[in-house]
Length: 259
Image 1 (cartoon, rainbow, N blue to C red):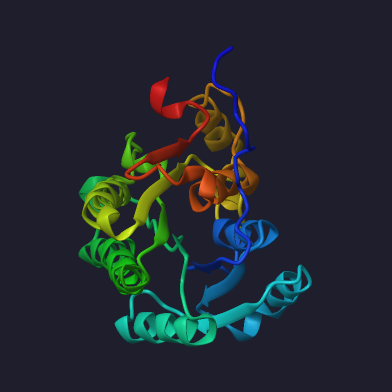
Image 2: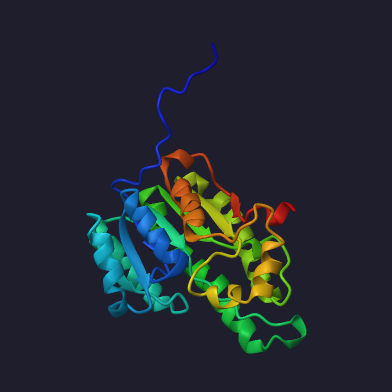
């Protein structure tokens, strides 16, 4: 007889504290709900705290403690204040889900300096500063899970998205660097890289039948993704089941990157 599994893998986040940036809608909102469903208390990083009462009530209705914090990751003071508030409230941050990103697209020859600055400021600098600030807390507590929401754009080419693709490739490699650097502190760092996902933000583009059909033509599994496809990967990487996984770029792209 071969080796037998004595215990089922543990995908629970019970008694954990998860901070999700950009948590008000789309993938960020879905990540907050999924982590709460797995047992975690939630820190909601929000640009509009007052407008998120429905989400807060939904999370509290699941029996979770919820701390909404004002968080624009382009502002270092809001990053530091939100992390300090989370640590004051819960004593620790076990999981960071970096979800915020912008993607003002244009053909490379038409990209403005303002668009470049916005993408680099938020997607790279903001993500790094958020990770650095939470990382310091995780180093102090000698444990943590960092999950950066990247994109297939960091692996494949997308016409009209050169700067966005560059920023996501940078996040992928930053995650590998931090995975190597912070492993000694008991911290794992991974990325989840979705294809086009049905959200309020993508609906206008995907509603165009030509764009929808062209996009679908790149996906061997034959469908546009939904937020459930993404959050399954996030909960896995945050859970004890992924305790030996770090430096991974987990593509949730229906096979786009290998087609």
